[in-house]
Length: 410
Image (tube, rainbow, N blue to C red; front, side):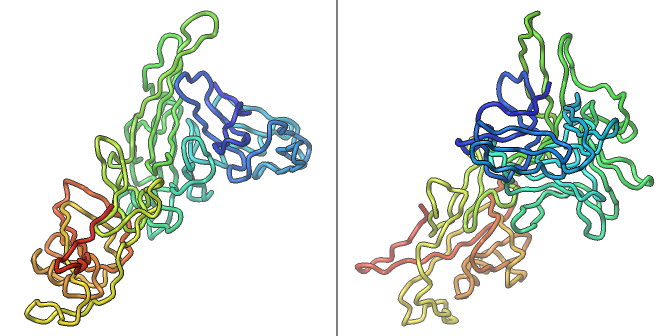
């Protein structure tokens, strides 16, 4: 069911090769579950994987570059094997001295764990074809309690913590039968995410899934390139006596359904929205994409703040104002308001006017009776129809030929 040497271009860059472990006999797609030295440059077709008494090395005979596989350096290595579990191991005589399961990339397989004590984590790939380290990570982190958390690597901002306050879990496990669960102190039951119960999650005899008459099931839990943690099952079936296989992949469980919950899926001054089951990024009114061909990079403001002066008490603009500002409301909008410089109880209409009259305010979020005023840039915006929140965006209107023209988004 497994292969250690990738065939064809698996580096995702279009100009080289990488070494890794992938599931064979998959008819719909190639699924990479581990990549050696994933952030090194891709190698040429002349590269070889060499096992010596000093360790496991990737040697590119074209560029004459040699790199050691991370952690696989030992003077007592005698052999190597790819196990049925999907783990690649090095032996010293009969003892395992290195195991790829101890160096996960974006995936854990049946029999594999993430442990707080070992400081192991999963880091998403850049894309489904580029298996270099991406933007999102899953690990067990200590913040007074040991909690499992998904977070944006560049900022360490967390967007998913499933555990309850006060409970301590120090290991995430996936067993061969597809039970995904957290374990910790003996005083707490396991927290089971999929395929099991708290009393049976750690049992290796748990029978789950339809294995089929001539098939088998492989389970994997992956932090995908979109930042969502999912559990998959891979079903492979022999359809003839000539070693012809067919397969199917299905999602057994997902940390959450709304992909816009992922922090960083859209860049600064933009927001995430799901349209016809597709996630996309959009600019706020008065903003434009930095790169229209790569909308996730964020947006920039299309106007300057020249001429902003605090309005008079009667609401009229100061007589010397060059630009006239307007506030545009957007319903069901949320963003990270942790950086708001003002948080006051007030009505929605008063919140809009308060931002309009304040030269430091470029956006305000009104939710649960609170008005939170923010400066730019705005981050982690998302449209959520279930949230009774209203956002206010300040825009400039240019006075041209006796008329005010509102600058909108593009």
